[in-house]
Image (cartoon, rainbow, N blue to C red):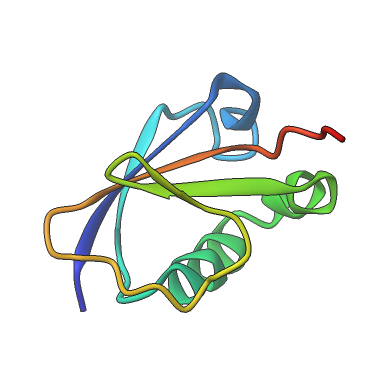
Length: 83
């Protein structure tokens, strides 16, 4: 398992109890999201609107099987809709 620093836009602060960052132990984005949803069920409403995850600045929208490198920072943001 990898210790991951998770940061997010202010729109997620209420879902995470008002905190601005978390440290979570997870190996992949999928595992990270499972842990976050189990711990913070209010996050579910944000997932329904769509989110994007970035590892050290590189955005991953649909591939949750990406391995998170040791010491990485994951940033969570609402998915930007566009056409």
